[in-house]
Image (tube, rainbow, N blue to C red):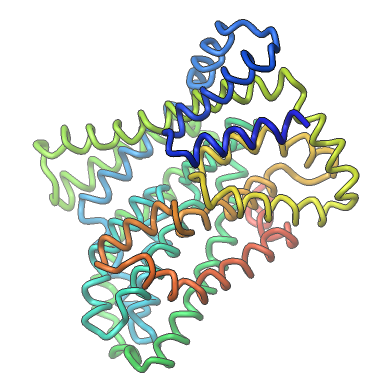
Length: 427
C-alpha cells in the first residue's frame, strides 16, 4: 500500500539521523521521482510556501515570545509562591506545588518547554533539598510541564485549529477540564510518593495574610489567560490578535510591574523566541509539502478503506488512534506528528461520527506524552538538565506518573463530555 510505504520510508530516513525538515522533503521528492508519479517539483515549493502563509500562524511566534517574556519576567517565581501558600501543607507538598505551578504557568505560556524550564529552575533545588530523588523531581517536572499543551493558550491547539478548521474559541476551552483532571492524577502520585518515602509530609499551613500576599503578587500574571480567553470567547479579538495582546501584556507586567527584566533583555529574548519559531515554521512548511502529496495520491481514502475493515466502531477507531500516536510520539515531536496525522485522521473521524474538537483534545493529550517519553522527549531533556539526573534515573521514576497519565488519556478519549462541558455551558 502506498500509504504504508510512504511512512516507512519517512521513518527510516528520520531515524537515520537526518533532520526532520530534510526527512520530510526527501520523502516527498523521493517518492515523486522514484515512483514516477508525474507531479511537477514546482508544486512542492508552492505547497511549502502555502503551508506557512496562513495569517493565523502569525500567532505562533507571538505566543512563543510571550512565553519567553513570562519565563524571564519573574512570573514563574510568583506562581510557585502562590501555589506553595495554598497547597504546601499537603503530603508530598513540594510535588503538589510543582504540579499546580506548571498548570497555572501553562495557562499563561502555552509552551511545555517554557513551562518546564521556568518552574523547574525554581522547584527542583528545593525538592532535592527536601529529600526527593533527582530522578523523581525531574520525572514529575517533565510530565507536569506538558499540562501547558491542554491549557487555553496551547500552541498545539492553535495549530490543530488551523489544520482542521474547528473553532479556536471552542477548542481553547475544551482542554481545561482534561488538564485539571491530569493535574489531580499527578497530585495523587505526589502524595503517594511523599508518604511512601517519608521525604515530604508537608509544611505548616500558610495564614490568611501569607495567602493574600502571594495572591496579590501572582494576580496580574494569573489574569492574563482570563483576559485573553475572555476576549477570544466574546469575539473582541481573534486568536492571532490575542497573541499580540499576550505579548503586550507580558511586556507590561514583566518590565513595568514586576521589573524583573529590562529593555536590554528584549533583543536576547526576541532572538531566542524567533529561533524557536523559525524551526517550527520550517517543519510546518515541509509537512505541508508532504501533506499535499498525501492528498494528491488519495492516501486518506486508502487508509479509510483499511480502517473500515479493522475498526467498525468509534471506540475501536479511537483506540487505534491512541496506539498509533503513542508509537509515533516516541520518535517525533508533537507538532510535526500532529501536522502529519491530523489531515489523515479527520476524514476518518468524520465518517465515524466523532467530534473534531474532541479529537483535537485526544490527539494533543496523547502527543503530550511524547514530550517525556525517551528517547526524543523535549521536556524530559530539559528536566534532566535542570535536575542533574540521567535518563535512566528519570525513566525508572516515570512509571507511576506515566501510568496516571495513560488512565487520564483513556478518560479523555472515552468521556467526550470532559472536553465539551465548559464551552457548551458558555454558549
